[in-house]
Length: 135
Image (tube, rainbow, N blue to C red; front, side, top):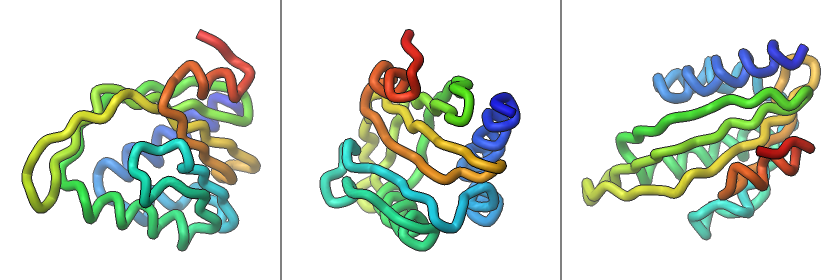
């Protein structure tokens, strides 16, 4: 089942990058809890509950930033998947200024083929440790 979880997160990530919000949210459980308290943007750093609240986070993120370029790695952790993001560059939608964001990671928790939890970490090692793995 864990490789299936990796594929679920991979498809979600690809859909998100391609701007297909419906497909990106398809594997998200309606009662998801997303912890962005460790995030780099203070006004968005909080816990989000449910798909509407999580969608609001991503709308606000995407309203502020235009084009995004990044690399990612998916790491199988059983019922969790670590989505490690590197080389993230954002372009301010209004200013056009490109800003680099340090590497970060999401730990996605899945149950029954649905993403029921997500937590952001500003360090891949911390994300791995949260799942019981280490580098």
